[in-house]
Image (cartoon, rainbow over all chains, first blue to last red; front, side, top):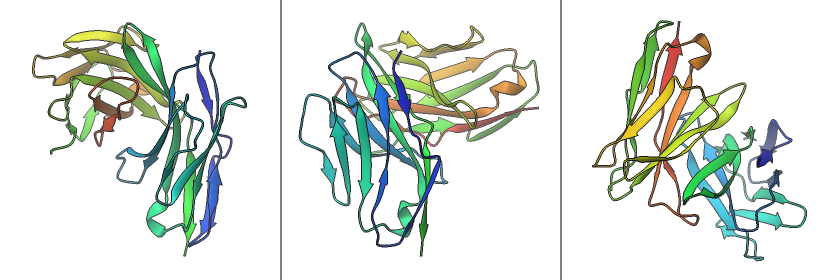
Length: 117
Length: 113
């Protein structure tokens, strides 16, 4: 079974600084997607960034970037120039085709990020 | 365009009762997935529906069921509620496919007393 591990339950960062959230996963599949979702207190899950497994180039979305190490099964999220609005739970997630064209997300336990003014 | 709408937002039920939660996906999205979120277990996949058919089911007892209508709206039902069913239930809609984004609703907070 696929598993996603986030080893940092909580992290904090000073406003305007950079922080990196860690994620590792376990899979025997070769074709899959990886995601980082943000869940603020409003509970709305918001997609931050996604990475296709067959692409070696790391994905970047404005202040958010990932370090994808496929062989090591590692997928970390770097947030640059942290802002107060970045404070939230961050979930790493994995998606693959479960068969018959069905897809499901497998989530890590999450990392609670606090941003200090 | 309108996002994913889940109703109700909050629900309090008594043990043994049953409950039905509703999810209206983004217009044009035909895939709806349900997830249960608890502090202890995190986010767990319940099931996925596409074209009114359940395509995949997570490791949950038969008390958890769902369905999808021809307009892609989905409902999930939990019968004989237990205290452990208290959770945030999230619905996600997508256009389907490995490279498509799943859009989440704000969830239904179910409390079983």
